[in-house]
Image 1: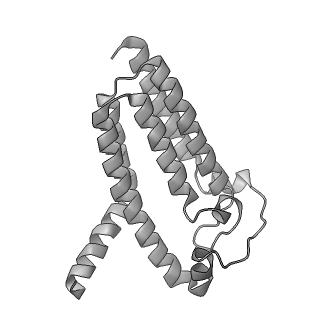
Image 2: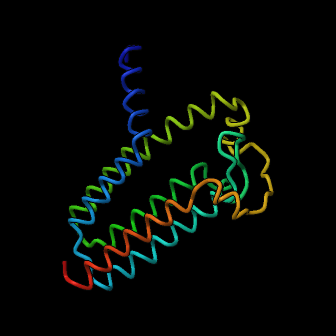
Length: 180
């Protein structure tokens, strides 16, 4: 691929990574409109989504964004626990929505935006932290034992994801209750 093609590809990935939250709101709105939840699908979906949010809270209580390569908590097992948690939350939402169209839409959104975010984030971490990130990525870095901090999770604004999850499932509950 030419340098120009690589720059264009990187620009597209960067665009998707930067816009993943706003694109997520649009996807969520479409999902809520297309959703056909039942109480059983809502309950299963909520249980799955809460597990995903729990993983996100745990990760947010460990990460010091832009300050270090975090190697404690769930970062000891996966490089991107926030994205894993988001993916589990998305699976829960799909289950609750009970719609094949929503499943396809959410899958496309997650693959495109989270994939782009991982690629661009790893490039930035390598640029900012060099061999420390490379060692971590190869699982050659020593594990760091840091306690979970709710204050850190709040500072990382994880409450926004929790609020979005609550709002989405409230709307799905109303749709289930009134057959909307």
